[in-house]
Image (cartoon, rainbow, N blue to C red; front, side):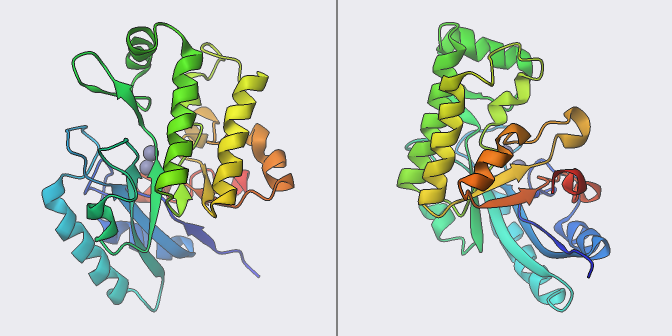
Length: 256
Ligand SMILES: [Zn+2]
Ligand SMILES: [Zn+2]
């Protein structure tokens, strides 16, 4: 029997992805994907360059429900959004998200505190901005930043649990050569594991994100955790976080 894939994390031109949702659907059908969830970045009350603008959200939701009907005999299309968790500002529990009638929510932390000028600090930006955040917000102490990053994710899991937690150690994006911190240090492993254990306890699925696998050979979480995750019954889903239709199965065959 041939294997069929599911992918619950992908974007489109409604946020920072390329291509219309329908192009993702057609490509997914082509690739034999049985369940496709589209999860554009949910709108935020400030500009980021990658989130969906609020005024586009109703069109996004309509378009997905129309596509769901149109292709219902060929694919199980699910409507989602990747929702930032920012205390008091945005999260899976926000009324705008709760009333959107989504099939499920991907909850992700990209923003950790703000710069002195009020600009939110994203860990998903270029490395010089990452360094600026460490120096200006965390007084040069990467450990403080990492602890806060995981603490925010645990806060989301406690207060506003999504169905899937996105790329929970993506802060490693800047640490390819272990330049910023030692990923094998006990304190660091403990942050990752306690966050995963909490997710499992809350019934939240931990995403294995393969978006960067072809470019940098990284997965989020790192493959070094996979054995521990299996031994501890951490529920998982493998997602490519595609930003164009051609990347719908990026990295899947190697990671699975
Ligand atoms: Zn993300
Ligand atoms: Zn994403």
